[in-house]
Length: 142
Image 1 (cartoon, rainbow, N blue to C red):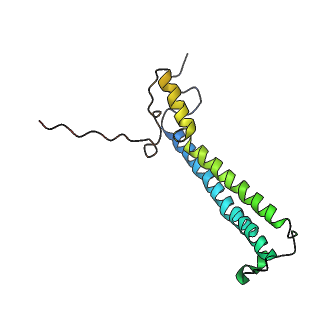
Image 2: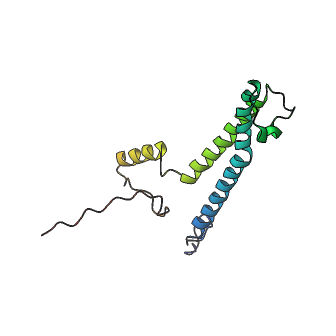
Image 3: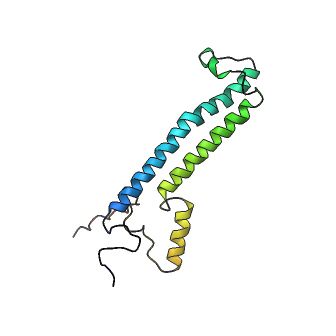
């Protein structure tokens, strides 16, 4: 015997699960931005400063970044690697947050839906601020 108030996934039928999912997604975006700002930007700065050091150009306020470890030959590699990894993680999280509403995957899915005869509009229940809006035509004059 089925219970009408319960759904198969165990989540309540109300909109609470969407709010919880959105909060978790926002939290993961905060972590991604925090990692990028705390690690990615300084590592990118180190990657830029290492060739300047080799050329003999020093910026006095940034002197603490010229420590003897790691060796000067590894600083650009570590800097670029860390910057790219944190930027890739940030882009991954931004893509997960946007879902299939934008980009190439959304276009392919919409084309597939049109080919199969399904409605091509956005899925119901999506956030209204991200759904594309179609302007309503003005009323004809009599």
